[in-house]
Image (cartoon, rainbow, N blue to C red; front, side):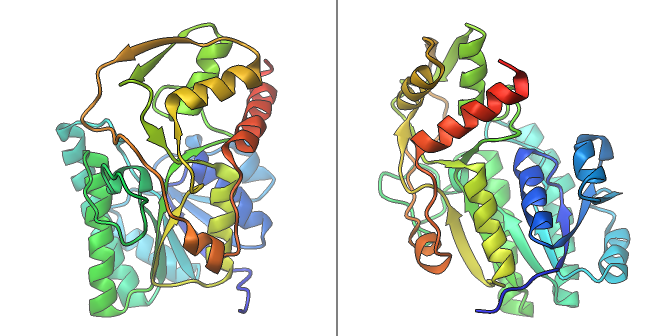
Length: 315
């Protein structure tokens, strides 16, 4: 398989910790990245200066502007990571997502189809499948149980429609619960990093449900490796789960963190939320067979994350 290097990539969104890590990985691998974002101030200064990241401010609905960027900069590939809601968002926030993200994305996809530009779309493995007792594969039925997952499903369906109708090239990636370097400690960012901050600050960790619900946690370095392989190997017209392939309960995660930090966690439990899946575990045979890739186990990944966290916050 030939390796595609020095591609010109337009990243839409991606100012969160997943996007920033991916930008860093792809640029170090030799690709040229242009980031499209609503606010330049959300992008770390070192990416702009050290890696010479080109940042363009634009809203997603400024289609003429984006079309000109694609033409003038000879874009080879678009990576779409833009989103304005999270798993716990309500119906009002979802309505805003439909107007500001979903509908403009559909128009963007129409334009990319006409220009024969491939798109990699970041969906959500943690929300789009809903509650599944069996091992999740890329062929598992999609049954989102929150507005975030539903918004991702709408875009996925439109991508597949355009692929059939206009031969749009695509890769849909469905990452599971991602954790790792550069993740913030605010309570919108996920369970592991919030738990680390709470334990170190001797504050109570709130758990929705019994804590026995399971998640398939994946370290950010593994997500970056998978994306780099997908981009560099020119993989097209695939749906790919990016996950560890093993599940752990929230209480197991707390136990691992207590040992890593040598501190005891304070816990409180609240009623289950309808928007949260009970159990998530993925089959990652495609990652292993096609990308020749084996992710970190939770113990090694969390050990790395705790060290990164301590270095970042000097604790």
